[in-house]
Amino acid sequence: MSGRWTDVEDEHLYALACDGVRHDRIGALLGRSPSAVQWRARLLGASSRRRRWTRRDDAVLRSFRSAGRSVEDIAAAMGRTPGAIQVRMSRLGIFLPSSLSSAVGMVRGATEQETA
Image (cartoon, rainbow, N blue to C red; front, side, top):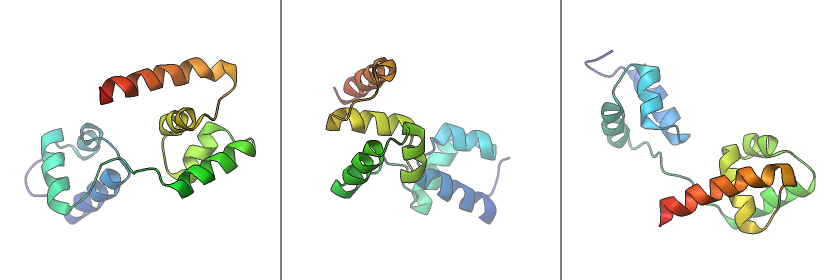
């Protein structure tokens, strides 16, 4: 699709961008280019920036993990990705079972490279 943006497209774009969905994925869903999606998201004030972790988020994460909930369950409950949960757990010193520790190491390595 091209041309004028419809109200329905704007609503979808706004919701997806605020949920942190990447512009290229939104574009594929809406039939728009990533640059068109980025431009329109800025115009609508839709933030795709990552949400900062708060002390309350950390406490909830610790509570869920100590209750034995899985990373996927925690991610769904907190509205974050499993990767974000794993990285935060690692930074807080909340360790996963050894079978998952290598995956966290890979995620942490990628995150450290992004911030370097």
